[in-house]
Length: 238
Image (cartoon, rainbow, N blue to C red; front, side):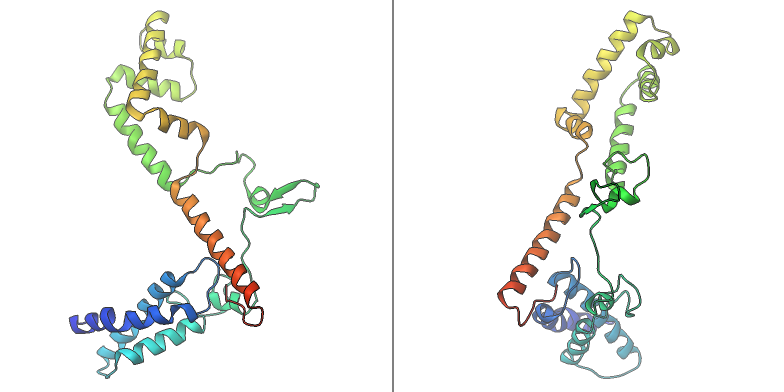
């Protein structure tokens, strides 16, 4: 895309897309900002294709067709209606999304969630987030690098579930020295990570982004319910 077309997209097309976003039907957790982003990508593809073909167009034409495509449930990543993840399939009522956290009645007459049914047998109620694991591994590597080899060996043995006495034997320490090393390791952990981080790890708190995402989805569903209740004749697409 040429610089001139890029300026047209930013300053002429996107404002029109933002103005039309509220009238575009949405599914799931989609909001106006996400619709604008998706429609902008479709508009950019239209502009690039027309520019390469030597066709003339205006910002209003591009915004109109991008908005029309989004309103007909087309998205930049998929335009069909046979996929259950497709907005078109959901808008037509052929499929609906159910949260894994919704409570249901299990066959054993116990209350539970869908996540309890499909979870693996060793699931303990909290699944680590990949970003959380990556950050934890980086911090742990930095912590180990700040200690001498004997401390690192003792820590690795303790992490494996071995007692401190066995760790002391592997490091060539007597019981008193091993106990002293254990207290030193505990003090170093508190100093390096802080009490708040250790409590968070022990408590199994979920990452902040997950709670923010849940809150945004609940707010979106609440606004849809309120809108549908105020005007039953013209329900708000949600």
